Image (cartoon, rainbow over all chains, first blue to last red):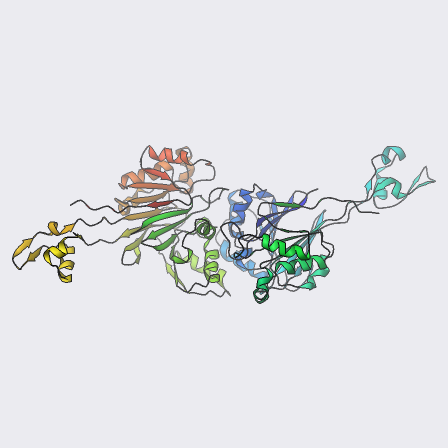
Length: 308
Length: 308
């Protein structure tokens, strides 16, 4: 049960010779979700040998070019490769106009399904048997949205020896996994704790970019396992961050701390930083478990059992 | 007097992990001209440390995404960098619509000047004191145009010792450089050959992509110094080349041979070729002075004197 994100781009609006603009590839149990799609995303997908064709859902945080300009090439390449599956795109309304304009007269081998993200509203965008994806507003120069990927509540895990020992039927198993006790031979009560292990924790990953420091988002992020929060600048440029509605590394760490996140990833680095350790170090003073993202690297959230 | 082209992208429509889509940076005496602008062109410009801000003219051969999708990011980055100079874009009409659509509501720090390239017509697009740029039609699935960069005819070069020896005035010099003889002390005839060296040859570079094998273009390419011609496939896929209106390496070489080009560059390689030596070898059987382009490499045309 994979639950991970691979970083495809880590720069802010001006790419550098080493860093591509924003894109994350999220993997939930081998279902792939692309979050933002800066210029060159399809090149990064190939470079890192990722499962190009298994992406069925693309979430675009906001309509600044460094977050969506790779989409048109990706859509075109999917078609050249003969894709048949629908491709679902979740974005603010303006992107629909651009897609209509850029794809006019093009023959695409599959169906694009556009899902409009409303401005200034939190809502669920997607659901399958494993996860939900919800969105909530950030604070940027234009409408920008965060995405929260969260596993659904799981059933309890049956102890391996329980089935032969109590000769459990499928119906019994279903009931026990929901937390019920079991009557053996109709009258011997077997407590649920004797039959089950604690279930796995529901894992979560949140993507927050681009945004000014905005503590209002903490309510959506409580106890998130993996928090990606933009950190375009260091505190040295705090005023410029405020003016451009971006965050400093320290501010990203402050959000992680308030949200009681398990781990913080920072990215969207300004081209002025040759070495992003500077930003990582700044964030770690406030929130120790911080990593400045590396392109091509996969950050996995491990399965852990709940404590009863 | 630089006259060179640097390759930024060499792949056909599907980029690979190693090859970016088409873009060439042409340098005429430190004036920079971008020819095509595939996705990631701005990233390649930075990677190869090229003079980003000195590009004032962009020529787009045709409206397939792998030849223009990098333009929107480049336009945006120029603006973020505070560009003030006009940027001239030469392309078929459809691109104007896309630019209007993609840039709606964006604040660009400079003026974009759009020059429409008509379909099915040869014409001069640009002229400065050193060069002209002309365009002529290729044969592709949609309207596609070639670009020919050619130095203007030069004056003869004065021999260094002539000025003191004959006490030449500026007016005398101008006349001699045009090829006229000179009367010294009003009656002694000095033949022009005694006063001048042969002038430098006018150098030329042609960009032909994308196109089926189309010998009609040879008339525009006669004696070209540096011919770039697409070679998407080898002869093994000649039928597929014909069907998709692309060329094989052998066909590109045939054009170079018929045009009596000095050197042939081939590019726009299909992603199926891991090693492009295969295409280079095929072309060399027909036209020996062929190179399969390498991204980041600059191909210079040296100055040589005309033989009298």
